[in-house]
Image 1 (cartoon, rainbow, N blue to C red):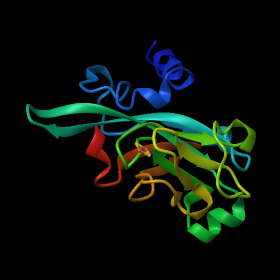
Image 2 (cartoon, rainbow, N blue to C red):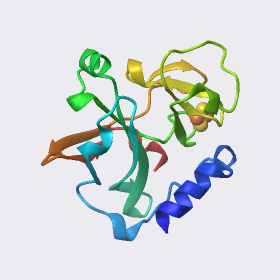
Image 3 (cartoon, rainbow, N blue to C red):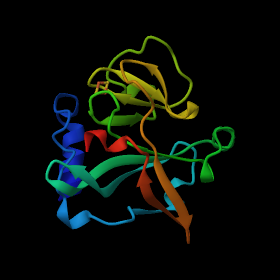
Image 4 (tube, rainbow, N blue to C red):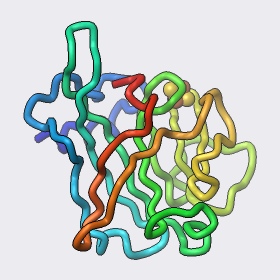
Length: 176
Ligand code: FES
């Protein structure tokens, strides 16, 4: 059910409801470790999976579990090696560093909902709220738009053929 709400949000009014789906107080998902994703699902360049990572964050009412949607993207080998990524995997929070809207992965240029000022050779991460564009092939470098930094990354390990998210980059809790 939670997943359906999430997908429905993305397909529906994603750009118009910046923080509505970044749920707070998700009591049944709190854990020290995040989701496990079979490495086999990320075997081809530019394949990606959606993940949700839950951690305790400080709020005015004390520690509360908060869930952070994210992506794990498998980059081409040469790119992954250049960036020094484990298994060529780029794992990020989908919460935009600008004002917290969802970031979406666009594998095909034709799926991007508005024209880009420049052409880019590889898939992009885009927040449609204010049109921030991030390049996963450059470690999430901001190509355009008001985002002040690349997406926050997830720390992860690969164990027994599974990718396990362990932690969110410091500062990534900002919109949690
Ligand atoms: S919230 Fe993402 S560009 Fe503004």
